[in-house]
Length: 141
Image (cartoon, rainbow, N blue to C red; front, side, top):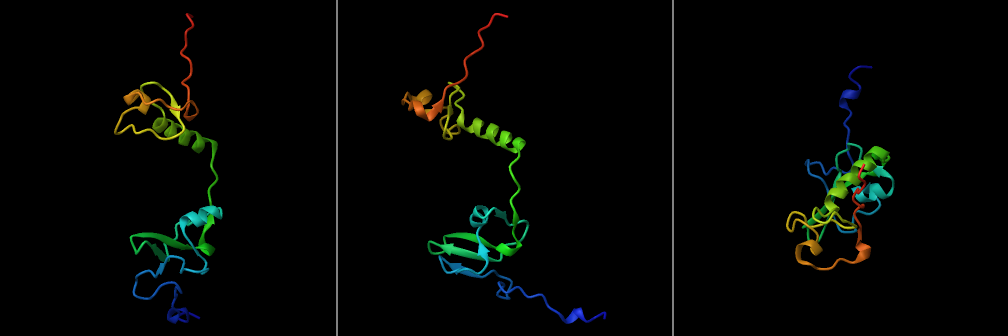
């Protein structure tokens, strides 16, 4: 019957009604089918384009995280070999010293120092904190 659905209103139980999102304090959100992005990631889920439905605050409101509905979350997209290779190249650019060619297991301060600490000021690096650069090609042919 046309017009019957016109008087129905879609109400979000998490929306306070004034257009703002509800704000929960630390550990007060309870188990209301809500989770942060990190919690969703631990469950193997992602928000999937949904808007946040609430906010959780800590440290007196100076830090906050968005809360999403778990029932509307979708599974994570699996990592492909191409994505993994691209991520490794990006991390190699941040972890490799341009002076000595060593790839460290942590990101280097390339913006401020421009190299690793050993190349910058001679501070010795622990041998287990980097991978030695590949040997140079020395064949005549």
